[in-house]
Length: 282
Ligand SMILES: [Zn+2]
Image (tube, rainbow, N blue to C red):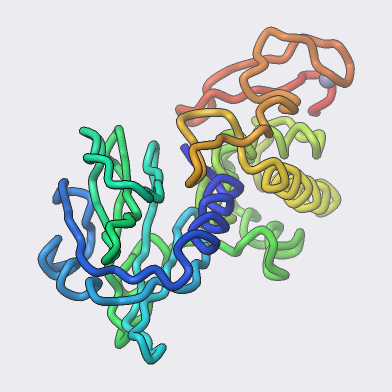
């Protein structure tokens, strides 16, 4: 599943390739892709004849701003890629593949295509008169962005103070910190030297400081590499990232730790495969 670095890579691609993209018409091929009230009919009627301008990211959500020609706001197009959602900018008219879910078409035939094999991806139309969390309830529940000043060891200590769940499970919870999934949770805990099974409330402030620094470090490295080669992630130009080549523990169960040589362990924690080094992570 795309996590923060992959979604950030897609955001950059969208901003570069669809700045001032005029949506002449929209075709929704799968009703399920549209999550906002009123379904595809409302979605199409409100978004067509708009310009796509800037793209922002909140957690794993992509937020495109919609404008009139005179730059008045027409609201937002919000997208969650879930497991396999991806955008492609189509320059020449190529018929849509079986997995094409939504087509945003410009006058000249240029098209922003949303392709989603597993079909869990979702899109919302948010009118200019509403706030995004009013329409997209998942955004309301998100914890702070890892790169924001709200995300720090003092915040984490307070948030986790009564939580007996493992730190791995807490990191996957989008209410703790936005945008972290399995890959970056495992890599961050390795970098911080924390055993993923540690009860959240037992972590000292010094551990939590390391955790914050490690998460930011790992996310920055991965964003620099354009995301990972894991899962089916592709950016808009069909290229996947290179972070996977450098992973310390993720998907390295049974292999030797790159730091100490011990065998990397792999076990399910709260239903997700977790990888860690028993020597480096106490
Ligand atoms: Zn090790």
